[in-house]
Amino acid sequence: MCGIVAYSGVRAASPILLQGLRKLEYRGYDSAGIAIHDGAKIQIFKQEGKVSNLVDTLGDYKTDPTHLNAHAGIAHTRWATHGPPTTKNAHPHPAGEGGRIALVHNGIIENYRGLKARLEADGRVFLSDTDSEVLAQLVDSYYDGNLFEALSSALKEVEGTFGVACMCEDEPGKLLVARRGSPIVIGLGDGETIVASDASAIIKHTRQAIYLDDNDVAVIEGDQVDIRTLDAVPVQRDLASIDWSADAAEKGGFEHYMLKEIYEQPEAIRNAIRGRVNLDRGTAVLSGLGLSPRELVQFQRLLIVGCGTSLNAGLVGEYAVEDFAAMLGEVEQAAEFRYRNPIVGSKDLVVAISQSGETADTLAAVREAIDKGSMVAGLVNVVGSTIAREAGRGIYLHAGPEISVASTKAFTCQVSVLLLVALKLARGRRMSREEGLRISQEVLRVPELVQQVIDTNDAIAKVAEAFTDYEHMFYIGRGYMFPVALEGALKIKEISYIHAEAYNAAELKHGPIALLDENMPVVALMNKGPGQEKTVGNVEECRARKAPVLGVITEGDEEARAACDFTIEIPACPHYTATIVATVALQLFSYHVARLRGCSIDQPRNLAKSVTVE
Ligand code: M6R
Image 1: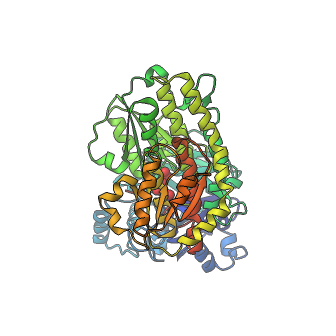
Image 2 (image 1 turned 90 degrees about the vertical axis):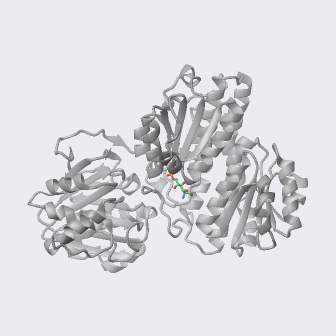
């Protein structure tokens, strides 16, 4: 939530800040702003709406001397938490006499009310409704000629989370950045430093980066970076090399990032499983777990935590671990897990799933599981992210940057890797080498099967035309295909704004069927596999109530086709891998429905890519 960019160096800051904001816009797009230090004073420009609105208000910043002479600046794209998405609430927030301090913030200052009351009692006047301005004013209240001291004093008083960047009129060229709970990556360039909330905003300039730890404060001036604790003790942080290519974060000729990311899935899944299948031994190689078969066999339960799409992927993992390993599998929404004093301990292997690695609830669940003595592993896409680092062990997805707010390739890579985790656990228990080999071969087929679905994109687009005018939909599936129904419903609602609910197909008769009529289409996961004939029976019941049915069926299954009004075909495969293959079909279906409805596909309303607040 919210994206921060900051620059200090030899080049003009404004174009670099704006380019960075465009890359981070998926993190929030309610308003945007930049503050630049032109050597004499700080100038702030901000605007409601997307970054393009901000650019319009700047005039010709490419030739304007104000911008050309400014070699340091901070910028922000906002996802509103406190106060509506207006220009006055946009960051950067000025503070102090003549606006000598400027600050951008990502996170939530939980004790902002008390701090604000105190600052108001001291005569300070607030210009916005935000918690972030309270931090800016607090920094100014401590400022006495040393920005590091002012910022660290303020941050010691703050409860909550922050990624923050600020600068002061009296200290030209200097940036201060700090974090607690919200990511900050510092890109080290030649004569310059670029700071951002994530690597996508800096890879155009450098691949050398430092990820700040919680409560680190970095003082940056040109290419000088000095990292200290809040108590001014110098600390060293590892230098990381970012291996994403700049192209990976571009649209590459696709109309939307979402479509590009759907199309990238065969390659992304190949990367996620590469080197992780041992065909000789019919098992998975998951060295990131750092656990031997002897250690793995000690666990009595696989407990998976996550949110949203990652939670749906976790559900497939639950089915797989019970199916393959005859081991107890459980999935829990991360926020529920953290707040209900969960019964969890040393006999549990806790797997935290997160594309971003920054989701606040999932991170808190990781900490809770660690505190309760469990072994925790992260299943994360973003390298160096907080969950990956705090879990201490885990498996990177290697899906490449996922920019579209709607998660697609992260899900299919998460499920692919979860199948391998289940296989690994199973082989240490009762599963034979032959059975392990059979499952390994099925997992290795997935990229090709996904490609076959993508090749039917035009046919899926045609089917989507019949569904653009509905306002509600049901998704149904059984067993492994139930999480797919959940993920299909999540995808259609977040990008097309059609209200959708997912049910186990058996559950319809227990209430939801009352809603069925010609205005309530049903998307049914009816591909061949366990329980299919029962789902076909449920579909008949839906059609008897005039609900239009779209069936996801196995190629050439005429019986299933006859039960539906519309069909999308997927290649034959076992249900455990069909979770991936069928999901890709539903991603394309959602994409085309949303496109035909004229929705903002990559940046749906009210959403943000990385949910770093509770
Ligand atoms: O980064 P994470 O995987 O932890 O994010 C979890 C959810 O916020 C995320 O999957 C969300 O549900 C997506 N927008 C769904 O497309």
